[in-house]
Length: 396
Image 1: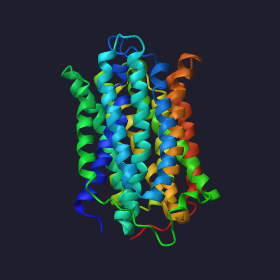
Image 2: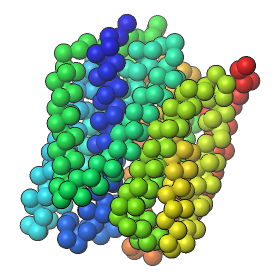
Image 3: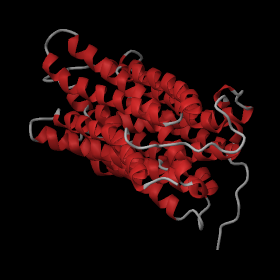
Image 4: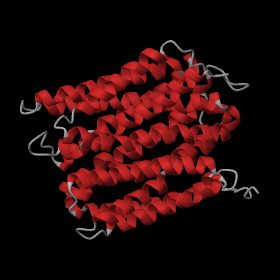
């Protein structure tokens, strides 16, 4: 039985991890500003390539470590890497104007963040499911709702600190919170209780073919989420003509609706089956992306609403993919969360880095890229019927 302190540490870490994860995209207008880091679209997108690669590797290694030594040490190591990332981001402002030093520090920061994310998030999902074994799906949804709340807070906090003339106050604040979490969590047991029949060698077990169906969905989801989470601000300022503040509002609304959706679908699961949620949401995301793709210049309010709809469409999909996978693939349960987070990060990397060359080198507009992403979301919706082939009747 988990203690209140353990539950608080795990769910608190999800909130702080969410803020840390979106700090870089939330600061995109600062990173690309000629008066600040002056990054091109391609250079900005390239920041997330080492993050994705590091997160993929860390997720896979973390799954093996969790099976052997439990979730606590990978969890703490992930928080420590997040702390390094925020410290480097804060310090990088002193290197602006000193050649490529600032950009190198940013690359190291995103790499550290990738390692932190890859170690922390699978551990959080495993711990949440372990703490509430009879309500694992709901526990994972609520955990990811707090992660989503953190991602929604990041753009708001960046705007607040930037308005005060100290935008780097955000990474400093997150670093302090991470340090506090590490100190508090180090004293807690944070033990993962093994399911019957599992063993420390579980991560070595061969992944069944069904895992790759879940993985394909996670890959497509990574592309869809990242097009919204990493490029919304630049699209709103560059294509729609929004101010930096209103562009931040669009990103905030996207992540806020991700959070709202996760809480909503966790609360109504008995009357609205999660399998039905899983099948419908990709098409909601596809509709939103299609609207975004054809936004006329000046339609800022419609853009904010469209990104909010996209957030609602994305909301429950990744946590449900993880919980469905862990429930079905019991024999490799500890590997599922890490493996799916790793594949999700492949999709993240494709969208985070790939947009820059498509836009800068090939001249493809961001609107056209959003339109193509709507097709990806439709494919995700079709695949959802394979991931959850049967839907139980709605409970009375």
